[in-house]
Length: 80
Image 1 (cartoon, rainbow, N blue to C red):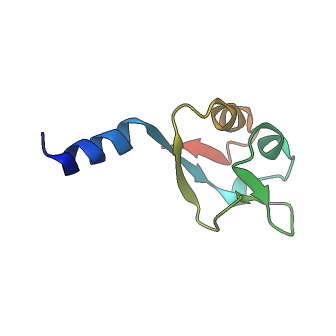
Image 2: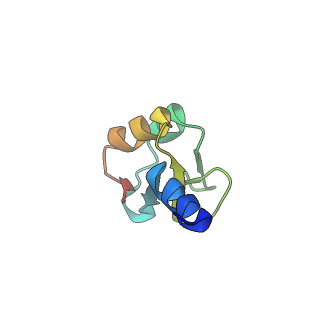
Image 3: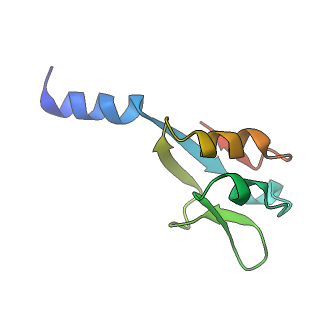
């Protein structure tokens, strides 16, 4: 296999894409409690700690983020 193809396959096989849906967020704080990937805007609505994007790739091995997504009561966090 070509090196670039291996790199692409490795990227997609070892990450999960997390999508934020701010309109559904009720600012309960669970996601930030479980994972450092999440933070809050001034109004308390969820955002990523290091980005203003609504989608981010995180390692599959990040069990804290997976727990945060599964624990969101309004499903404002989704895995694509």
